[in-house]
Amino acid sequence: MTRTNKFVRMVKRPEGAPTPDIFELDEEAVRPLEDGEFLIRALYLAIDPALVSRMRDENNYTPGVQPGEVMQGNLVGEVIESRNPDVQVGELRRGNMGMQEYAIQTDPSATLVVDPDICEPRLHLSVVGTTGLTALLSLEKIGQPKAGETVLISSGGSSVGTIAAQIAKAKGCRTVAIVSTPEKAKKMIADFGYDAATHYRGRTVEDLTEALREACPDGVDVYFDNTSGDISSAVIDVFNMYARHIVIGRMAISHLADTSKDIGRRDNNALLVKRIRKQGFVVFDEASNFPAATKQLAAWVADGSLIVKEDILDGIERAPEAFFRMMDGKSDGKQLVRIARTES
Ligand SMILES: NC(=O)c1ccc[n+]([C@@H]2O[C@H](COP(=O)([O-])OP(=O)(O)OC[C@H]3O[C@@H](n4cnc5c(N)ncnc54)[C@H](OP(=O)(O)O)[C@@H]3O)[C@@H](O)[C@H]2O)c1
Image 1 (tube, protein in one colour):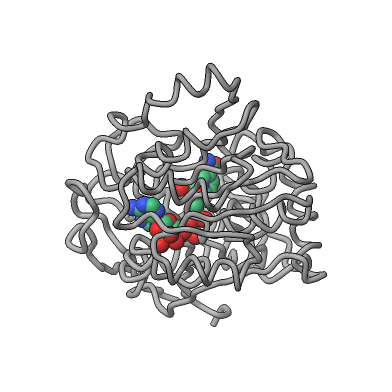
Image 2 (cartoon, rainbow, N blue to C red):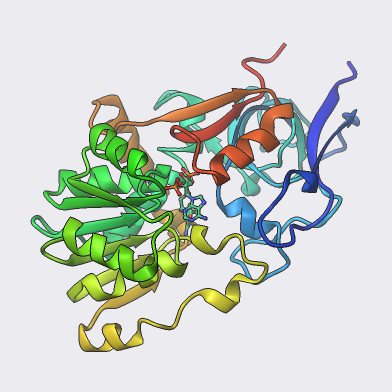
């Protein structure tokens, strides 16, 4: 049986903010498997902000995509053929297999087997996958929020941010979101139970600091930093003594051609005087904790204590559109692309 693989290619690196002309849709026949290989048919693709840094030739914690290659992307998919003794047809697997309908894989350890019994397979791309694991494990390891403390979350409407907010709230913390617009700020309070929310778009660093003083009258004990850049500069003056600053992501500097220039060294004075602990977090370092954390997250989804929102477009052709929806903050929940429902 000859299959055709439709995929998204990154034809060139972005100069500044990514633009639609960096992507091209292409297709080719799926070649027969060789010994040791297995074939995945993609079910869902996750559109993750981390893709932006993978497009650039810069220091990162995972290797980037080269111009001309299939664009990277996390998939959950079904093994439909296998010539690898360690991989069974019918297994579900997730991992960075690219923006494509079919992916030929060789290394079973490069993808994780997904248990369809603990939740819907696509949730392994969000709440019980990297997204939820990042929120839960970074709070446990670095943030360590205690009842009564204030937890401030930039990109407070992101999937990671909304899950972190709900976990912190369940621990008895006051939760505060920073998002792009006043409308989105209101929605955060209504949808995810934030105690307060404010916006960054159109504000100077000083204006945002003032807004944060109002939103966080008792100061900030844990800053869950999804953005870096100017948004994070605005937080410096509202930190409490012994605050914890978890560096999770770089959304606010993702438009810069070289993000290494603007990670911000403006906070040393506050770090010193207030004994603040600032630490980067990369979820892949926590692999030994994934099984227990995955079960915990799935249990919270099942008993309704975690609200999960997803925004799903249909067809690999819409992956570039989905990418720019995510970049523009227009996705209403984790941005996914449904590629195939079941094997045919
Ligand atoms: N360190 C790790 O191991 C790890 C693992 C997974 C994810 N992450 C990071 O976690 C963060 C959230 O990921 P996610 O998958 O949850 O994201 P997501 O659900 O796709 O949400 C992305 C959000 O980013 C915001 N955004 C877009 N452009 C922005 C800009 N220029 N400035 C500020 N905010 C902007 C948008 O919200 P607004 O409309 O409010 O701007 C958008 O809703 C990202 O920084 C990601 O890289 C880190």
